Length: 368
Image 1 (tube, rainbow, N blue to C red):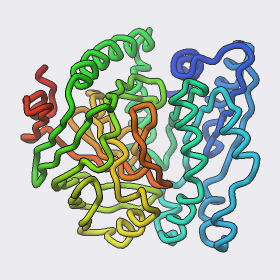
Image 2 (image 1 turned 30 degrees about the vertical axis):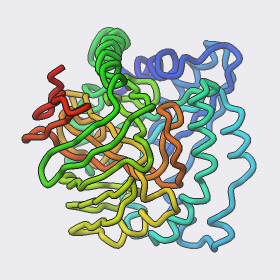
Image 3 (image 1 turned 45 degrees about the vertical axis):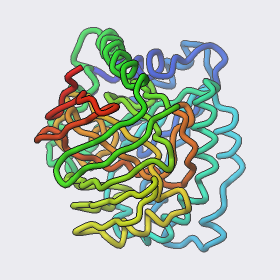
Image 4 (image 1 turned 60 degrees about the vertical axis):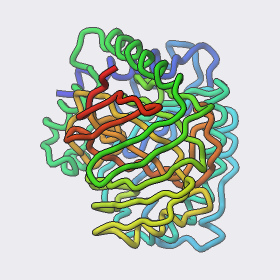
């Protein structure tokens, strides 16, 4: 089902999402070997465009082995090649094709937090270069049995879900994404003329200042599939409580029925019905982990249900998400952290969003 569309998929990632051009240094990161057909087509498309592609592959099992056996010095070590790549690459393309999405479920969460803290400078460098238009990047997935099982689907069903979410079923998906981009920019333009955002919903009433920050429309550039409008709020402005009804997945672990209370931007109370220890360890990753790095509104109407894959779940039409940890410099964010955990909330059942005290969104839909 998926194979006939691989060339179209690669074309979008290379020529639309990252706009690879002659002379670009392109690093293609592939998690898992199942995605070889897609990686090959991306590699070929880069060569045709005159770029210089390099492929990096990894195995899921290595991350599990590393966290299990690495000592403190090894957890904090960042190799020079990783630093060089993030400092010099013109394009980074990340392809996920895991054969086991739960291989880190029982990993030591304190060690995971330490590793995330060590990787923070690399993540920050990528975000900083991206904000300056010095580097383009995109994250995409290839359908695997592991992803399908996590989403309670067959492989064929999951493949079709990915196809639909990306609009790969259309003769010209790029045209569709350009149309989506136009509407996203319209809404972002309205939000960029406001300075306060308030989310109200089930057990939720939380407010942020967005004064001086930029709302960014997302339509297939850094994520594919896409469908969200986001910003990084003023770091000390978050006040209120939010209840995340969907399961919150991160590094193969999950926290369910999560309650977060913010005061002056900082998490002062956090609890989960299950996965609470994991939640606490992640929020203690570093000083920036208890501050909000991103607030966003999901707009992809072809994604309606949680699949356990954040690349898709944060785009659910009729949802919002809040990321704890690192923020986005291009949005004006200043918070730095090794953590960036997107937590998703359903807004289709009575959820409301106010911008400068004006109702702009209700029951999962914009009304502006």
